[in-house]
Structures are given as C-alpha cells and as structure tokens.
Length: 241
Image (tube, rainbow, N blue to C red):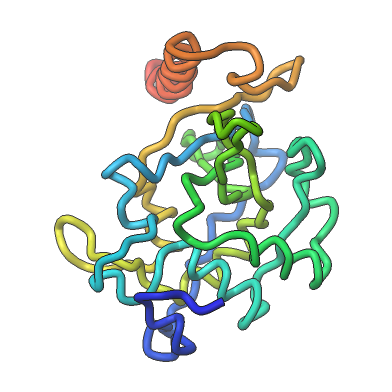
C-alpha cells in the first residue's frame, strides 16, 4: 500500500538519515531500589501530539510515525510486530506475527486509522545516582473498536513493538512536521525527550487491571490524574531524604 502525501510512497531514501540511537545509561539490577511498571495512552487528537499523527497537508513530507512503522515492518524489515492476542492482553512480545498475518493486518489499516499509541514503560529509582529513570519497553498503535451498530467501544492495540528494536530504526527517521520551536528531531529522540502528552492507563498492581476495566468516564480520568501525580510526587519526595 502506498502512503499518500509522503516521500515514503517513493521509497523514502531522501527521508532517512544516518543517525543512530544514543546508548541508554547502564542499569545494574543491584542498583534498582524501586520500580513501577506503567502503561500510558498517547492520544493523537491532542494537538500536542501533532508531530506523531497522520495529516493530509504536504508539510508531512516524510510520513507520520505509523507510516514509518509500516515501512520498517515491511520494506525495511527492521522491526518486528508481536501479536497482542485475542483479548489484546498480551504485551510480553510472546509471538511475532507471521508474514501473511502481518500483511493481512496492515492491509486493513493505514495511518488515518491510528488514533493513538500505548506505551509500556518502567519507572526506576536508581540508587547510585539517586535518579528516576524512565525506560520505554514497548509501543503499540491503537485503533478504534466499534460495535455492530457502529457505536464506539474504545480502543485496542493492533500489535506490540519492542522498543529497544524500534529505537535503532526510528533514530534514522525525522519527524514528519517541525516542532513548534523549529527543528525536526528523529522519532527516537522525540520519545527520549518525552515530547508528547499522555495519560496513565494502568500501573502495575496485584489485580493487573487497566483503568478502563474498572472505571469509566470522568472517574477514569480522575484516577489517571491521581496516578500521574503519585509518580511525580514520589520523584519529588526523593529529594527530601
């Protein structure tokens, strides 16, 4: 499938760069004092996430994040897509899609169908330097789920991508649109700098349930905000001791 309005439709040689992902700081298990696993939702309807979204204007010269992901999964074969399972509960990169399955999946989607992304990450307190480190583990494009009557039922992960593998590929692709202050960093650097907005969907807990499974509407929004504050309050409180 060609990607309209993007140089990716022409093979993308002029879009790619020779950049490489910067090595992440080494982390020894013995230095991990505290760790919390967090799942986040990046909403592409939020204007702050415009640099990740698809668009119909010609300024999106090198394609949205999903355009690049598609290219890397197929033409480039530099990424691997993992099956989230029949209930979309498997985010452990258990089974890679076979080629025919991936072709079928991507044949049903284009960039305009992607409404957001799910991030799986670890918040880690590293005691040697007394810092909070955030390590992204996985990225999943989100698509809408609708009932037989067309009613919106939420979103689901279309596949999971292993972030350490994604970093290497995305470091070579500049974002489709310049940032508000100018400049077009790679998608990898955009994520490394946390240049996106998101809401907490789930924090590791005994029940292993996401917010939308136990709360709806404003209750879910308020709980997501509470969990976000809890994470940042912990980081702030570290400096009091």
